[in-house]
Image 1: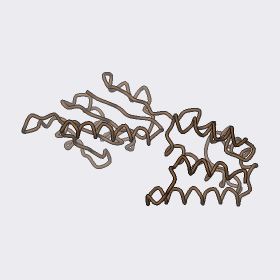
Image 2: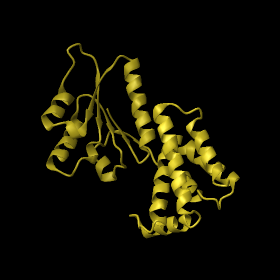
Image 3: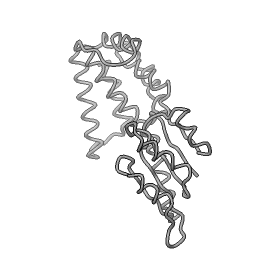
Image 4: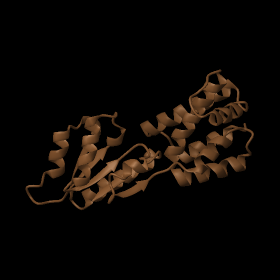
Amino acid sequence: MITILHGENKIKSRDKLVQIIASLQDKNQDFNRLDAKKITLPQLEKTLAQTSLFGTTETVLIEGIHSLPRSKKKDALIAIIPNAQKDVVLWEKRVLTPTMLKKFPSARVELFKLTNSLFSWLDLFSPQTSVKKHLRSMDEAIQANGEHMCFVMLMRQIRLLIQVKDGGKPGGAPFMIRKLQQQAQYFSLDQLLEIHSNLFEIDQKMKSSKGFLSLKQDLDLLGVSLYS
């Protein structure tokens, strides 16, 4: 059986991959984890066809095969997966198109999307939004997308706003740039730089496990600080 985990919400899809690995370990089932950037066609053919000496079931986990540069090698790697004699899990950090998915007609596919609630919260992130509305919007975004994904996307949003406020023009659709320009008007450059510094401190606390608050609590405080 082939399982495909894909979508823009890489944190939730990665969590699902970790759950699958934990389940395999609990059942004492073997698995082979492969990075698509490092494998060759002969290696993948051997891995997908190889049987265990003890007759145990092995699952093959392949990460990022559809993110490889376009090439004959990439096409060949993808082409042999549907004929695998083992269970295969494909983890992709992007949304696969219907054409890509069509090559795996019997696969179980799970799409991990970024929801509208996340983008609504990011658009509302400004002192012009009431505290109550801001916190309610953030709670909805976190519930649907996870607190870590919300944190990552807020960091990205603040960097884009800094770029716009500093006179730059980020890439993207014209309507997205107009929305950023409108939002940037509600901040001074110093305010945006301070928010970015606060986000960086939160990130460092998470990585060093030195924070006393949960990530959601830190985001709550950051949101409230907009109005102080």
